[in-house]
Length: 376
Ligand SMILES: *Cc1c(COP(=O)(O)O)cnc(C)c1O
Image (cartoon, rainbow, N blue to C red; front, top):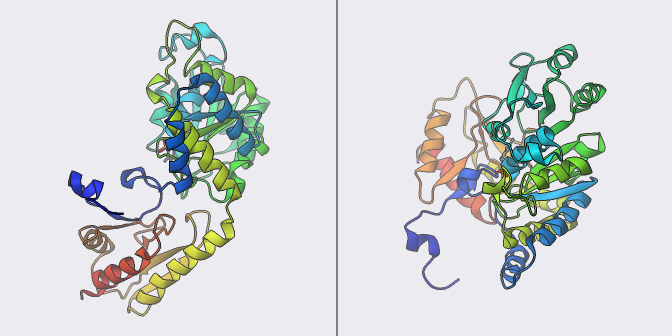
């Protein structure tokens, strides 16, 4: 590209993102086809409700659900799931949110799955009711937590997130009490199969980020599930002809975002994911090969549900004499260019998700990591 770089012009430093699809570093990078579709979408006016519904159909198909909707991210998906579960399609209730006095407004959530995003459920006016212990829960505890005021049960699928009961067991218990299960699966794709899994096993609604593994616009998301609940979600967004906007109006999506996400979903479904993983594996192996001989470290490639794609992990052994993991991270973040790596997971290991490492950047990461570890 020629001309001054837009980030240089703004005085904003470009960084290497070896920390995965984190919002703080910009989520993911859209493919050229997505940018092209967004540019094209921006040339015309359309009826936004019609476009939303067209996008919803793509989401429904991708998630093998009765219905779908495009949202301004999984956080907006959580807000809409909560609102839909509380109001259903009752417009009198829709218009009262976030005031839920007198409504079934409780959402059960496992204590073990509390996370920084669960405030997005409360934004709709829901009251979160914790179930179980910090790391576990029993079926009877969930049964006991579902009462007259329960509008739904929240389930969070995320790396390193506890699963105190399986999603299947949770669904079985909730459904035996006519209560819907709302799944936050924000960063669970790839693998691509995870798009259809929650609905296939009976979840009533599920949300995914569009701007993480799917590589759509950073502020986009998918919401899919039961037709009546998705209809309720639409009412809580932009109820056509109603005097008041829905509670989710601050989470609006643009025509460019909708078309961008549709394109990203289509590309994602067509992608040869095995080939992509093979590239990630090779990039990761380069880093492992460069630092594996440093004494006191155990450096491996890990692939598991807790790791997003194949990724190098540096474990610091008992005889490690160099800088602490925190100091290594700090040196990397203060380098030129700054390199941001993961903060471990099992302990204080350094993990290096490759999903956002652009071709060639693995060499810079390996150079900087080796220098930070060995001091030269
Ligand atoms: C990232 C994340 C979200 C928020 O997703 P956005 O698409 O950025 O709004 C919600 N829940 C979990 C578990 C996440 O990891």
